[in-house]
Amino acid sequence: MQEALHFRSIEAEPVSSAEFVEEARLLRRSPDASRGLSLTIRGLRKSFGSNEVLSGIDLHIPAGQFVAIVGRSGCGKSTLLRLIAGLETIDAGTISFGEEVRPQDLRVMFQEPRLLPWARVLSNVEVGLGRDRKSPDAQARAEKALTEVGLAEKRNDWPAVLSGGQKQRVALARALVSDPRVLAFDEPLGALDALTRISMQRLLERVWNDQTFTAILVTHDVAEAVALADRVLVIEDGKIAHDIDVAIRRPRQRGSADLAALEGSILRELLRGDDRVET
Amino acid sequence: MSLIDSLPRIRSLRVPRADGLIPWIVPLGIVLVWQAACSAGLVPTRVLPAPSDVVLAGWKLLLSGELERNIWVSFWRASTGFVIGGGIGFAFGLANGLSQLSSKLTDTTLQMVRNVPHLALIPLVILWFGIDETAKLFLVALGVFFPIYLNTLHGIRTVDPQLIEMGRIYGMTDGELFRRVIFPGALPSIFVGIRFALGIMWLTLIVAETIAASSGLGYMAMQAREFMLIDVVVLSILIYALLGKVADSASRALERLTLSWHPAYRKD
Image (cartoon, rainbow over the protein chains, first blue to last red):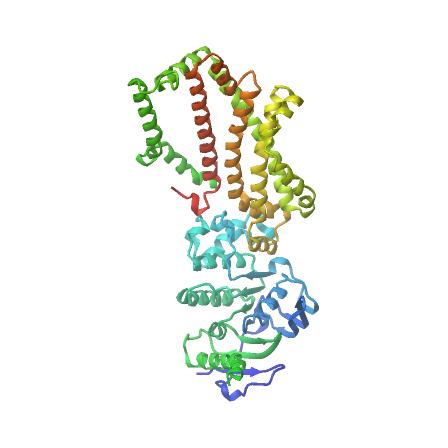
């Protein structure tokens, strides 16, 4: 197997690379094949009252990359995502995309599906078109997005009759329908059961692969992060503590030794503080 | 689309089902016992006339045209007052739910007025408007105003903020946000207000018509009392009950039509 991992640390002390499976590196998709946007963050800070949540984030995400952000709860990972998505105001620093972004280029998917309960599945997807909602091909585009997530036959149902996983798939279709170039996921699978999660993860990977947007996934599930992402960022105390390349060939085998080893070492990193307290 | 989808449901309402008859067992039973008690002479007809006498009195009034005229007058007063008071209440509810400034400016005043029982204003209203139509409309409108105002306000304030954030992210304008997120979200609460208001509407009208009127069901009942026509008095009361039920059913039907997305309103 020609699979490998790269691990590099920005600010915190590096984890010894021996802890990671060390193999040759795979060539990633060339950036110009992607229609995603690249993203550059410089000196980003954010405080809520006296509580500094992000204290200086520097980050570059190439176009089309799948980045996962992990960390303990309250580490600021969701805040970083909300700042990227423009849902919070920046205190200091800059977030810039490679080129000018239109609102529909940037979409967010939340932990809750946030579907309109009084709109049928198809019109919920049409919401995602933004200003293009009134264009004549709106319905056709919404239907295409629904087909993409495998829910075409549910188009006339109320959201209330769907299962949790189906609601999230509708939310995904709504996010995809405007052909976004950056898609931000805020723990989108956090509320789903284990099996539904895995099939949703496959779906996310598939649409990312097909549509080649830049994906930013915030998750507390390290296994999910290493299964999906090209690169895992570990955030601790408002800073990027580790920046890990996951150069394992896709499609990835869930539960494979490589993924498990990488997951184990990231978890060890995250839990190091706990051990210190205990001993 | 929602109208088309709800058509089969309306059709199914027309088909009488055994289930639909259950609520009528108790009222029907009461009428039967009542008739039996009167026929057997257990209840003197001067205290309570038999249902058959009430029906007969109704038939006579119907033939003379008096009954339809009075029902129509009462119905017109009730609905006009409801539309005026409900409309103003809805408008204030919207304004205060959507605008901080408007809420700060008017909510305290409205809450103070709310605590005055509107029927306590009858003497004042008679002095202002006489026993004209305006007096009745004013009282009904005032009574209907508060339940609709309060529930519209509550409905708008409790719309899921996550949905509003979603709407903004997806580029909805303020108008679209209101039409597609805020108003539908507030609708269940608005309907609660409407049903409360319908009850208050009849109550206010009965009181107003018995005290100060020269037509309408309440007036008909008061006239009948003067002439000791107890069957007509009972008839008016029964018609009020029936009209109340009709108003309630109408609002339920409207709820079912507009809230068909809501799990609580999907099929009984």
